Length: 143
Image (tube, rainbow, N blue to C red; front, side, top):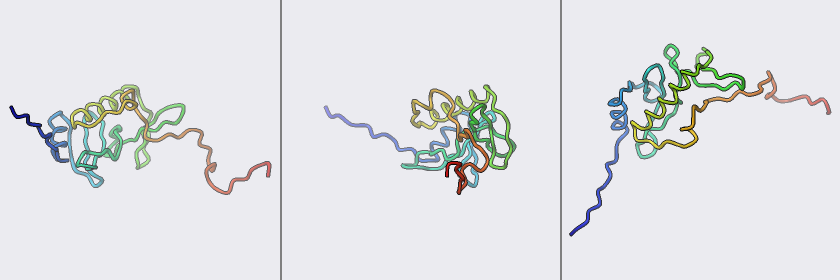
């Protein structure tokens, strides 16, 4: 008897996108990569190492034609777009983003990380921001 090892098929970036389409995601080309959308949640992906999709813009709520990035203000989470629109995040939207991420990773055959599987991860964190605090030079009262 001869034993054969079955070689795994290496999928191209377009093959991964076709798998996402088959799972009900809308895929369209945009200037920064490829936008994948479903049920009001979207993200942007590009080809990464070995033609695996790499998420360049984290999933967020679609606000007009832009994707609102989840921002943690310390006291509340918000969705903010690059154009300046902002809205408070609802629990249903956070659940939808989490489900979108998990379904997309499963559809494309990507690795799910344990810490990201626990819940929704914010894109930006804006804790304790006092105007002008991060700008130099800073006057210190003891000097």
